[in-house]
Length: 82
Image 1 (cartoon, one colour):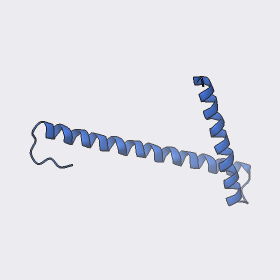
Image 2: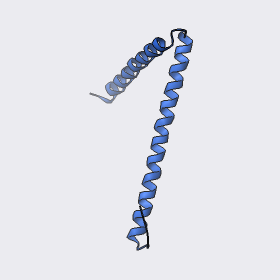
Image 3: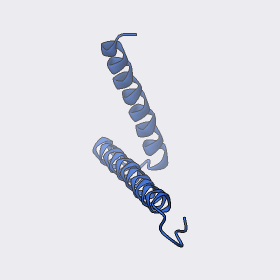
Image 4: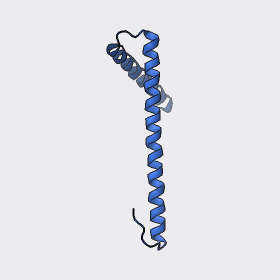
């Protein structure tokens, strides 16, 4: 699969998942019109993006702490705990 085909496949999968999510939103909120459903989908996507970013940020912090501890231990610092 070429990079272009992979990109287009990813785009298609995202569209399928958005359609699935919209159907779920409509089923959960029968009083919502199309605009309300789209707004809720955007809210959920933003929330997902924020959660993923926080996960990345937390992992980076863990790696920094591990690297700091490993550095201190390798340089003979006393009483270094993980």
